[in-house]
Length: 426
Image (cartoon, rainbow, N blue to C red; front, side, top):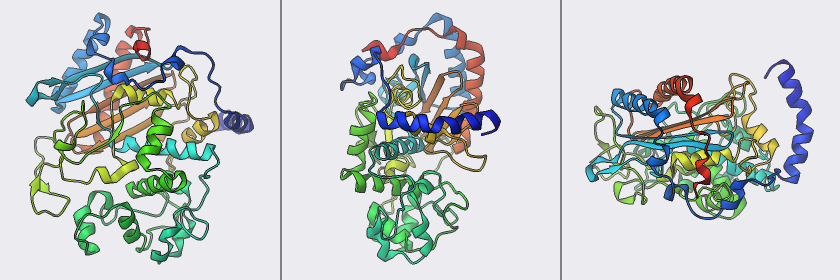
């Protein structure tokens, strides 16, 4: 943040703090009348966004999917907290003749981190924790693991360090959230570890850097945040997020993902690896070779690091609830939103988001074998969300290509998008 922008932000903090304590103003708006448990996914259809003025946009999306060999994808577009466009492309499950629709749910991968960060901010607003709270040590939230700690640097870790990937964890020897078989061998476990067992084992190892002095993207850090939510709230992670984040935002069809095709939720897509992807050993240690999308990793066990399933339309609804535009009432106070989206410098992750620019552009990505997701909220008040049920050979770098697609579509079709609000379709 530079110059006048930084000065204005600093001067705004006391006012924002007062607003947070008083609660976010949510004046009369049509959206307030439909916060009841009916999912957008039950209402929206592809036909609602079959608009002649932007039919060539559909052709561009279809062409993009053919180039990348994507079976199915979902696109949602909002402007000023109004859902202008929500459409599915291709197949949710071609084998059963199921087309992709706006209501199809998909694994969101690391977009889940944004949801987890919102949960942490809700708890901070309630005074249940502070992001400066220690994670371990005598006054730490997760001090039940202190007896396993051998490196005193663990006692320096704060909640904010975990949110910003500054906890001292690296993936130098692999990501423990996605290398379950290696973890089982390393710690001589006969079954995949649950969150508490994994934490107890991992905190017995030394950190790779002093917390707060560097950053390294850490899925394990967000598993710890999930456990912090459970410890502070006295609820399961999923129950707390459902009750205190998602439903308050008007999102009623988010779920924690299953690991296998048989565990899919009603309305959930099928997932497809890229064509050159080979089978892998099942994460349970069964010795069987499996499709990477189903049994290759313990996705359920990632919790707040990567386990949520949802639709692009309801994801757009969630973003509209944490963006500072009160046309859809926000579930966080203005200061919490400011904290989450403040850009400190080029080397520091924001809270939950992957990147937040000085001009107000916010980005969150997610990627697994079999899915990719991108959220882009732009300074002009628009938000574009694209989620696929197919992975590509470029892996997480695919988001850069989707960003390019967004640039092209925005330049060509933004002015032609309708002014209606599909959030009000209920």
